[in-house]
Picture (tube, rainbow, N blue to C red):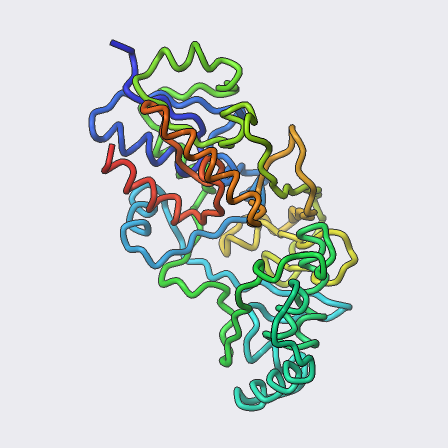
Length: 367
């Protein structure tokens, strides 16, 4: 008999949730984490009374009652509505694109006026079969919205010209013909008091967690400790890239303290022009309306980055080549009955936090 029923590789939302659920079912669980803190990319820490999101801003949002209840059962959650702004050539614009945005762009006051303006601009482009991302966006929203709020941001995010990106990246651009600045359409939305690391730590109470452990460097020894392995890391790395490397986009962060109470109007401001090189600035204290620090603030500049070994993979590159390669790796994984793939890195998909919870619930039931 091996000492553990499950070895879980990774302590992000997926790994920590599975560890908790399996422990509740009476299973013996060991969690190993490559970093020196739990939480994966939702990890947070508190500095001078401000909860800092270490790997980019996260807002929990969902319409799934079970996911919302689970979060509230394991953390203290307070209401927070995400209303980011876009900044372009010295002016702020509301996001997502709504009647407030259209008034800022054209001075229109009604939904009918806004629709007519967008239809007029789309018709002027005359694009019936978009061949790239730029043409796709122009065929959906016209020139003004595209140039002001889409073009520069998209090229920064992907590191390529919009005319070189496939049209399939933008399936649609949501337009709201009402004055609603809430970025999400979900029923529930909030932030965790003390940060998401507090939530993850609560899930992992009573579970053996080994930090600073590179599973793939110690795979043989660690595999011998458990009957089954739940792997939440990069699927291509697990197999030694034997079929090739999957593509990712990474991020780079530069943070600094400002000796002011407030630096920008909202917690998150997106910079949609091609310059500056960063795509957004996060002012962390503004996620918490009760932040006790009124003497200083902590801001993070977020830069899109190419991915290479040693960097953190954030976003999948959802073109045909990568999807086919990911599927090939998943087929390879099926040959190992003791290996279970879970989470965004192992399944090569973008997952919101509630998606990770919902999939962990389902997987725990099947196990």
